[in-house]
Amino acid sequence: MTRVEALRLSRRALLAAAAAASLAGATTPALAAEKVTLQLKWVPQAQFAGYYVAAAKGYYKAEGLDVTIKPGGPDISPVQVIAGKSADVVVNWMPDALAAREAGVPLVNIAQVFDKSGLMLTCKKSAGVSSPKDLKGKTLGVWYGGNEYPFLNWMGKLGFKPDTDIKVLKQGFNVDPLLQNQAACISTMIYNEYWQVIDAGVKEADLTTFFYEREGVASLEDGLYVLESNLKDKAFVARMAKFLKATFKGWNDAVRDPEGAARIVVAQDASGTATVAVQKRQMENVAKLISTAGTAKIGYLDPAAYERTVKVLLSGGSSPVIKKDPGKAAMSHAVWEAAQK
Picture 1 (tube, rainbow, N blue to C red):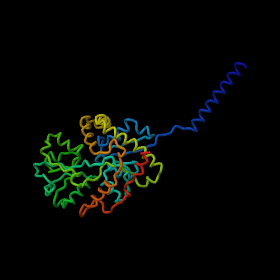
Picture 2 (cartoon, rainbow, N blue to C red):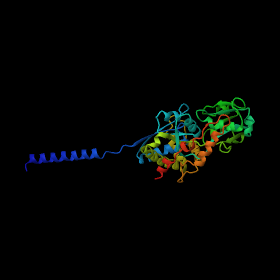
Picture 3 (tube, one colour):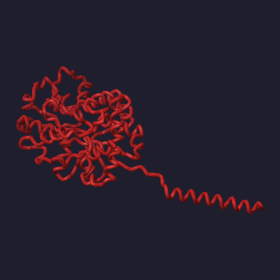
Picture 4 (cartoon, helix red, strand yellow):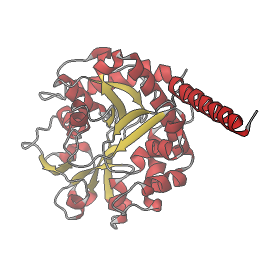
């Protein structure tokens, strides 16, 4: 064989190898990550630590997912976002979700990470408030944008009519009305605003607090909701099952290591105002609302808790949050069960 013939044979071999490689690439393409968009209810904080931890530790990636976590804010409604098809799944409180469903946005709860309520009304004792009956005649700070429903339901149960028996102050997402004596009481979360009051110099002994959980008017918070129509799509259910599996791992880690979770959350805060110390404290209080953390039941929506919330929302006197019982249509264990497999 001459040198020229050898070179020609070598070239043909290389071309054949390249063609084979190209054919193999065409028949066995790399699997693209499945995209999932999650809309949060508020800005980055430990309230959502489980999602950020799952992303930071690669749990979503390990499930073949490309998850986009969209922070919320005072002008962002998770209901509007998912109704506009700009998110696959949203974090929302059940009162807002069920009210939205009744109004025509068919949301369905697929998982309930928080199984206890962190909502409370925080009052100054100096304002003359020591029991619920003392709320009559007072100015009370209330969050709106879907967060007002538990409060209005509670007032209905007490027999207090807004603007008649009580004055409702539409509260911003801060504690200024209490600090500046513009309101006798304000809405707070045990993991966030309550501690802002304390950090501002108010002593706990000078406060009266009413936990919605203890007052018998608590409703489920921070559940994961999707559009009902999407649950008919097997591929969507499978994708959401992977999302839940990774998410639950993230929450278990966050509960187990509050400081580690806090560092991950702080890294997501574009404003630069979050601190590890504050987010660690927040995470420690958030953990108290997730009694199923570290168990096989994490994220499982207890039917009894769901029915209790529905009952509370239906019993708001002349202005109930919802007027019709949605039955089991507003909840589904299908995705949660698929995540266990």
